[in-house]
Image 1 (cartoon, rainbow, N blue to C red):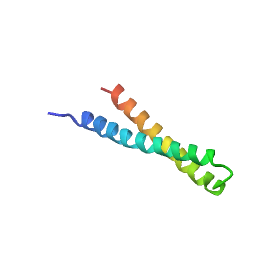
Image 2 (tube, rainbow, N blue to C red):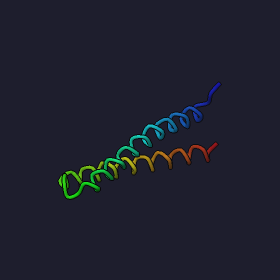
Image 3 (tube, rainbow, N blue to C red):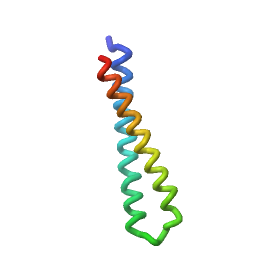
Image 4 (cartoon, rainbow, N blue to C red):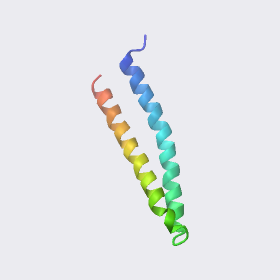
Length: 72
C-alpha cells in the first residue's frame, strides 16, 4: 500500500514537472521579448513579473519536496 507521504511526494514531483515546463516557456517568451527590444517594451514588466512568479513558485515547491524527502 502507498503511504500518504509517498503520495504527497509524487504529487509534488508532478506539479514540479508541469511548472518546470511552464517556467521554461516563460523564460523563452521573456528572452524573445528582450531580443525584440525596443519593440513591445511595454510588455516587458508584465512578462518579467509572470516569469519571476513562476520561478518563485517552482523554488517553493522544490523546497517542500526536499523537506518531505528528508523526513522519510
